[in-house]
Length: 234
Image 1 (cartoon, rainbow, N blue to C red):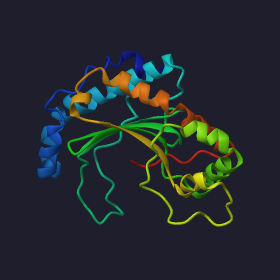
Image 2: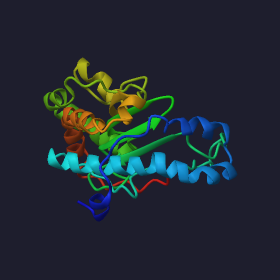
Image 3: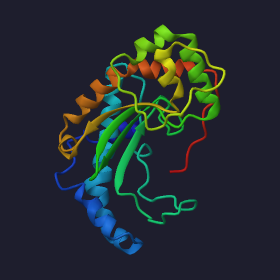
């Protein structure tokens, strides 16, 4: 447990109107409005999400799931990085956080939690793998097909990032072809504003993460020999 975990209040849920802040922010994408309303953002969104991170970290530790987050650093910034984006909107209209084995955002094999007016969800897995990581993951799937099938049995893996064709030089049974075309290995739990308004959210996310433990452990083993990614600027 980190010091920040110890002093963070238990997650009691977001207020029913909390996510409505993002509708106002979408209509007022300017620094002056945000600074005038920053205290409301902190009190109704950021601080409760910090409590969510702290409560999740403790609950996952009890279940012996090695994912944690520091409430002070696990949340992503509300400011968008517009340096290389054609869309110059300065503020995000969502709030999100990540828990990982080392408590940082650079690790692979994470729990990600996302709340927005247009959709809330939790996700676990391995997102946007770099070429070396993707190669290691695919190699492990081919080398350990039975273990892979057991790891993802019952999971619905996202197909948002998938190659059109099977990578060249890979030979595997047909039932593995789709997995070997994936560029990210993610499963999601659909949530809504009512879920985020209740402390019961902790149990739902823990159960979801427990169900996906096999995917996490398979990927962690596959990537064990690779160096960690650099911390992203978010």
